[in-house]
Amino acid sequence: MTKTTRTLGLALALLAMAAVPSSCDMMHEETDYCPYGLYLTFKYDYNLQRADMFNDHVGSLTLYIFDEQERLVSIREESNTATATPLANPAYAMHVTGLAPGRYKFIALAGQKPYADMLASGRARFVRADMGAGDPMRQLDVRLDRVAAGNGIYNIENRSLPLDTLWHGMETGGFEVSATRPTYGTISLVRDTKKINVTLRELDNPAEMDIANYDLRITDRNSHILWDNSLDESDAVVYTPHATWNTTDRTDAPSADGTAIEAPGRIGHADFMTSRIIFHDDPADDGRLTVTNRLTGVEVATINLPDVLSRLRTSEDIHRYSEQEFLDRGYDYQIDIFLRGDRLAYINISISVLGWSKRVQYEELGL
Image 1 (cartoon, rainbow, N blue to C red):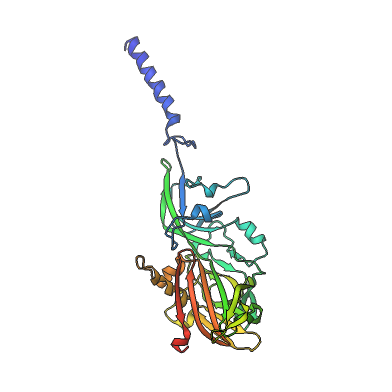
Image 2 (cartoon, rainbow, N blue to C red):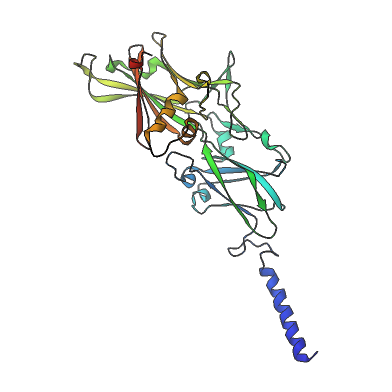
């Protein structure tokens, strides 16, 4: 071998050695040009707007990572803070490192603030199961705080505060994590908490409406959310409004015969927040809104919530949804109740964000 050949061989060897550290397959460095590990993005477009609102709505994200046997491997959490808002970045991705090569499954629970802050608040809370390494995926459930009221009924005590918003997402098909290349995946979220604003108007005597004279409550079986976002409907719970108030019209109200009462009409308002609303095959299993006149003791209205709210899905002919898909996509409902004394006249239901509305005439139906 000539001196020139030996020199050339040594130079090539040195070049090969120098190239090793820059190889993403050989050395894990977190750089823009050398990604590694698992990169998960999240989206919340399962709504009636059909727009991804993850960055605008979600403030905290907890990711539960399970192996192929559906045993917990790790929990990761990332949240917006007063000084940093990573989840608000449209390019946000949770970078998960430290996983051995293999296929993993995921459940994501999200809120508007870190889970520890949610637990420390005074409102009714969605409490997650305590999970440790090796625990099965099906053990991960969420239970809404409740207090026994007797006869198998539980009260959701909101302490005049709305519920924290809860989102759920999962990927049980799994993503394959490699030791030699990055893995990318996306998990979609669905919002489980619903806001319902109820208004009361009196048609025969509009000036005498006072929300304090009415007991409003929603009864359902939706306080226990299972790992796959289905419900354990064993126990009935009662929601009461977290806020009530009256407003007054700026003009005098008409009486039943059309003449002026010479007093402005009044509207009673009540804000509810509930867990996920389910449309059942048997209407007897559906959640219900009831309104009772405290002065007379008469239940003046009982409304099947999933049935009435899902009627709005036909307001948009272009995009037709099943009853359950509509209820899962929607989250901000308005129910206007019109009374004649202790009798329900009609209701108007709407979703303000899209301007959809529908009137249900109880008097004409003879209900």
